[in-house]
Length: 196
Image 1 (cartoon, rainbow, N blue to C red):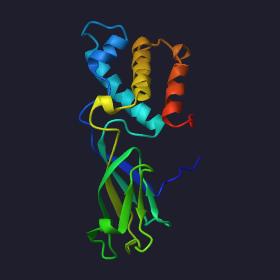
Image 2: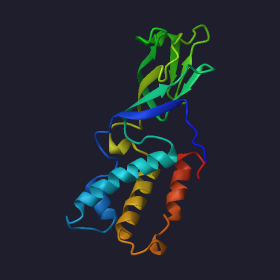
Image 3: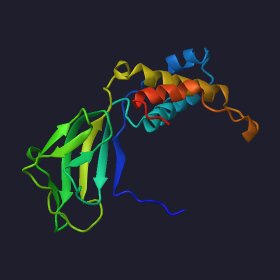
Image 4: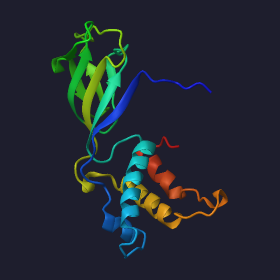
C-alpha cells in the first residue's frame, strides 16, 4: 500500500516540564504502595499522556511544537494542534533559500480554533522550491500545571496506566486485553464527540 506523504510535519521542540499525573497518583489509582515498579510507572505515565494526546488530537500540558510546511497554504489558514496557547514565530525560506521572519502584523492567531489566519490584505511570502519552506513555532497545551488539564484526560490516563500495570506480562497474544470501554468514552468527550 503506498504511503501518503503529508505536505507538513509537526515536531516537538520543548517537552512539557511536568506530567499531568504524578507518580503517587498513578500508583494509588492502581492500588500499588511499594516502589518496585516506579520506573515502569514513570514510563507508563509518559506513554499514557502521549496516547491520550494522539487519540484526542490535543496536547495536555504546554509544550513547544514546530510545524513545518513544504509550501505556502492555498488559503489564508494554517491549522495547528490545539489547544493553541501562543505562536512564537513564523519563518520562511525566500527564493534565495535564506531564512526570513514572516511579520506577525500579517496574521491573527486564533487560539479558539487553533489556527493562524492571514489577514485579507496581506499575502503569503514568496518562497523557494526546496522542502520545509515555512515553519511555525508555537505553544500548545491546556497550561503548565496538572490542574489545568481536563478531568477527562486525567481519567483516560489513569485507565491506561492501570490497564498496562494489570496486563504487563501477557504470556501469549491471545491474552492481550482490550482497553476499557471507559477510555473510548473519555476520548470521545475530549474530541467533542468524534472518536474513534
